Length: 141
Image 1: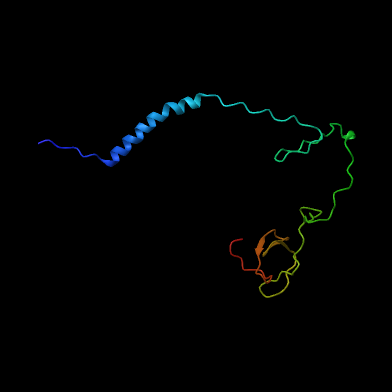
Image 2 (image 1 turned 135 degrees about the vertical axis):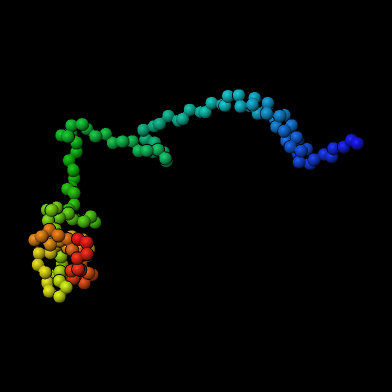
């Protein structure tokens, strides 16, 4: 008994696609080999033309000799949005609120070094403070 083959629609679609690709491929390859037309040259720049959008501004010419450079018109302002740097970088201002011990008595010689952190200037040790300004018991100093 001999079997009859029924056409498979998927196989037929795949064979049709392969045949179409084989017919188009030589034309596409030939088109890729053709040179593209040359681009027109850019317009010559003129001195009085306005700068083009997207192009950087020309760099200003700075004379190499400092004596030939123009003098500054005004000094740099000492006040502005930037924070002022302390006169002596090693000196830290004392805490604005007094540091209190656990009994509530003020402690002298403490310098605030960070929020909720003070340094004892006599011993050089650091201590934690509560938000109220009281020394916290030593845990891991």
